[in-house]
Picture (tube, rainbow, N blue to C red):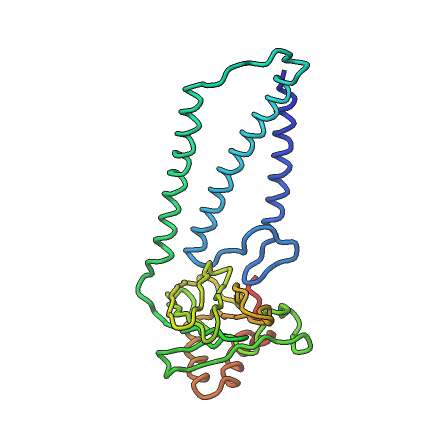
Length: 287
């Protein structure tokens, strides 16, 4: 009796899944993509694990939603006034009440296991190969290299008439922080005035920059390119003008860049430009 309704429900679910898959395919690496629905591509082990957890939770949610929708359709079809003129007077069902208590608990346990595993990966970093310190202020970021004589660069957002072809609007900065590929980078994060939030979506990192407190995160980028992020905390009227950009390069290029940066950031930009022929030093698209 209710088979057509169930078939219609399944068709709707299949269409939604197809649309979601198409949207996810448009998610980019390092920066947002037009009409993006899914997460940015993962370039770190932790964010890949977060991708898997996201897909796992999405599958569980889809099953639950379809199950509830099917129950609603069955109730509408089988228990409407015309099909069921005499309503049931049943008020309790022991087995049903036990089931709808136990099943949610089991679902939460199944979700908790990969969740705790992901949390452990996020907050138990391996020994660091490099440490950088990020300081948020209204409204820019400073990136400090403590192991390089406190080398400091200020990242300011490029306005529209300063952008080079291909640079993302409100994400590109005048200076770009540089880290080597396949190295564990420890990131110390703090704020100078109000609470900011350091975020690089493709790295899967997000941590608050709190004045008077030193928070910490880490990443290990496995693909070269520029990766953009921005302040994810409402920190004031110029909150939207606080992007941050990190370029991942080979160890050889990083060593050359660091040596040049200790003398002049302009010379360091030239090193990056020479390492990426035909591209601006602050615009290496991670695609």
